[in-house]
Image (cartoon, rainbow over all chains, first blue to last red; front, side, top):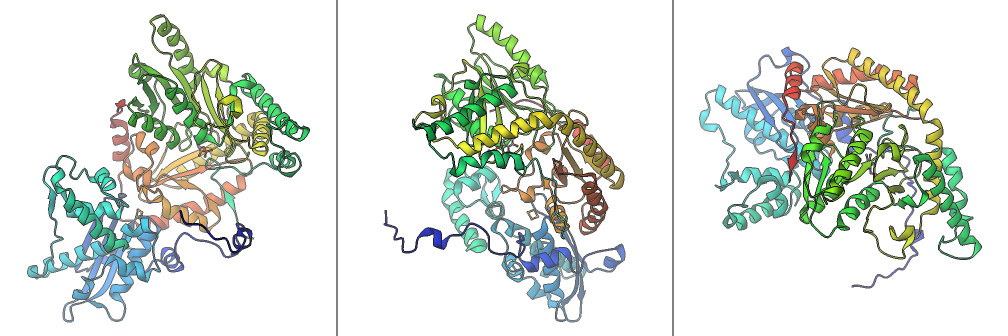
Length: 224
Length: 414
Ligand SMILES: Cc1ncc(COP(=O)(O)O)c(C=O)c1O
Ligand code: FES
């Protein structure tokens, strides 16, 4: 073991009595602001009367739910408004609120750009999220994509619909790449942890190398 | 000044000033090692002996039947693992689905080492049924561990009744040459508010900790009835009669004894006062907020526990709002747990996920006053209304109640 050099006496460098007199809060100040003052929330039925696309998504992680309505300017193909409702924790509420700002600010976001919004983009705008809360912000961009697909469907642009692709990884346990992605988002990082959540490869060990590769991929993608 | 209303006494309690005062001399005045033979050491030894005596009197046992540990979790581990590891053969353990994680995980650890394990179900109020215990017992059953009063929902289990049944059964089993079934009860939540008499409860082991009874954290005790075979988990210098090695935490032991002494003197009156506040609060919430369900038993309930599921909202968001107005509370929502699993206790009641999500636990204590609860009730309905506006979920209360009534309740053997 490496020898630890102790230049300063520990007592001089460590003070266990907090010096910071400001109030600590679990999340960043931006999240706090969006949590207590959510933007673009649906307050009454009229708010979403003439929407162009509706998306809804449930999180298998903790049973949370998100609903998103969008209004699209058909000429410019830009999202003009996004309204939402979220059943979930503080960061889920703030993430949806922030997403609604991101797609409707500066005259609206072109749909093609909105489709590219990733969980990290939302997280970044929020000033960071605790690791175990990343999955809440993923909920937002998924709900938005589902609303856009709904708009494509309703406006006769079926060719633009993007299926959230799923690929079967383990035929025995019926586990898809999607399930592994979810497991990683829920905090699983090792094969064992992913197996605990999905049962992948337990009756079918030949798929394990691919599973391990996917775990690395998704861990890198979300937590890199 | 900003309000600060602590309604999370089940999580931990502030130390009573009298406890702090009792502990004070043992930090730097009487700091001797209890194992040293000079007078300074004997002073510490004496303090431990006096504490042990005082506690023995309160819980009605012999002083040597008390082992001091590093907290509730350690006492539980010593009771469960210590008694099972003292056996040569693989045995069967019974516990309930609503135990503290310390019990559940200690039992699961033994299960992974090859011991059998059964989990008892509870009814929709969180009560364990003696019939289920009878059904779960096997020839090789050697341990039953049941929580005395639940930390989340406050339900008080019939420990004395179970203990009396086991005592009788053990006499028969002795004749049949079957193993004795040891009975452990986790009384961490109960100790500060309910009478604890280990003879009347017929327990072989009982866990109490300091952090829930206005004593110090990181100190606990395990009552071990004479004749109960226990393998120590912490080996070393042989302190605590060879059952828990390591230099004793003298100030904390003194603090634990003082806390129990104060609880013993004051708990009757305090329990009555708290029960009044509890019932007022439960009534207020159910009258002022629609779509709520009380979790736990309506009567067999800790006098300081209120646990209510508020439909269509999520607990973490609710706690953040309450924190903002200076109220500290707790929830069984999945979003606040590290595993993203909702409370296993609320789920065991037969409740769907939504109910665990919106569960709000308010636990009252020594410093809770009616006006604190009035302040809470001034704000809670407004916050709930706000959060329901944010939420797309609209559960059907009748359906939820039906599904609780219909929920499957059976013994799970692993
Ligand atoms: C019922 C119950 N058992 C055990 C414990 C664990 O005690 P400790 O935190 O002292 O280890 C607690 C408190 O956290 C509890 O409420
Ligand atoms: S929505 Fe459940 S953790 Fe964020």
